[in-house]
Structures are given as C-alpha cells and as structure tokens.
Image 1 (cartoon, rainbow, N blue to C red):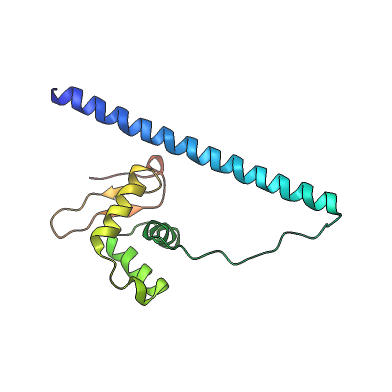
Image 2 (cartoon, helix red, strand yellow):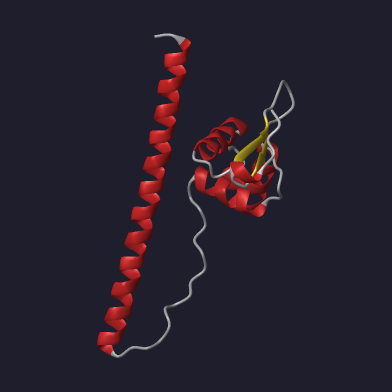
Length: 142
C-alpha cells in the first residue's frame, strides 16, 4: 500500500465514522421525540395537564462528559490546561488526579467528531489551541 492509498483509506474511514455519528445522533433525537410523544399522550389520557417536572441537569460522570461541559463553558479559544482547570474547579477533588493526556485524548475525540475545532496545533511546550465552534466557522492556522 502506498501513501496515497493509505491516505484515501484513512479519509474514507473518517467519513464513515462521521456518518455513523450523524446517524446515531438522529436515532437518539427520534427516540427522545418518541418518548416525549408517549409522555404527552399518557398525560392526555389520564387528564393530567400539568407541565413536566423540571429537574436540575445531571452532572456528567464521564471524563468526556466533563470535557464537553468545560468546552461549553469556556471562551472561544482554550487549551488542555484551561479544560483541566475548569474540571478541577467544578467537579472537585475526585478529578484532581485527571491527567492532561486523558483530557487531550478526549479533546482529540471531540475534534474527530467535529464538535470542536483545532485552531492551532501545539508544538513543543506550546499547547494546542481549540475552539468550540465547527470547523467551517473558524480560520484555522496550523
């Protein structure tokens, strides 16, 4: 296999992954809408017209969930260190041992899924800079 064929197969695998994510999100959205329809229908059948109970959003229990929450709360530009500081400040002592490499890996997965964008690749001691916006909204300088 030459380099060109390798790059083509790699790009195809990435596109298949992105398509799988889109399908999974669409299925989740359909399932949530169906659950909501059942809730409304069951309330109508029982004569209950009260609005659904409002509950506080659950705290993310996985690192990727915590990283997503941090990304949503941070500014237009952030680094692994910014995300680590946010997670430690918000989620407390149980996250004190979270490694930067784990956060970096989670950010890489979010980037692969196009949930965030790499604005500037890190080099040496300079960390990679990310943005929560989709790639088409950013001017990427690598």
